[in-house]
Image (cartoon, rainbow, N blue to C red; front, side, top):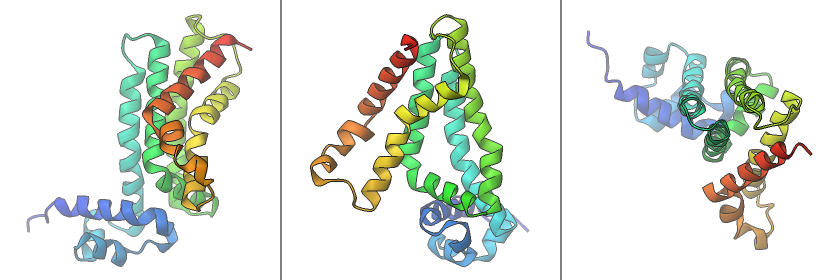
Length: 209
């Protein structure tokens, strides 16, 4: 018997990606995903084996897209500070584009959902390792002073990524003051704003102050 079209895999994953941020692991049902994808619910089990396996595939698919780009920008012959800036920009773009999904993963993990916890345990060390390696290389090449690795990493994430999460959260609940809302995209979320924060953050680290 021929295997059903792999288009169903993609339809189911796309439907899951749209539904998961609002429903989480507990609320996302096989039937609801299948209905949104326009396929028979049995196809979730056929292609993925179980609801948990489907959720793992859904989360991993998004992460691998980001990690592939991160790995590519972190390597090569370019100046280490340029590679570091590109890696930070890639992570920031991913957070900006997938903030609802990321927020839900964290909420599910904190709520005890094993799929989300396993996902974070398996993947968080991967991009952390890439960034820490770039920062260590920059230090070894004399481009950054010697600094505590995790303190340095936390500073960069606070300067570059945290504003995206804060702005997205305030925007989603209508807590952003109207005068600031008009400037949100340009001054906090745009590529230009991301690049400026990355530039300032790296200059701050390089100063050693």
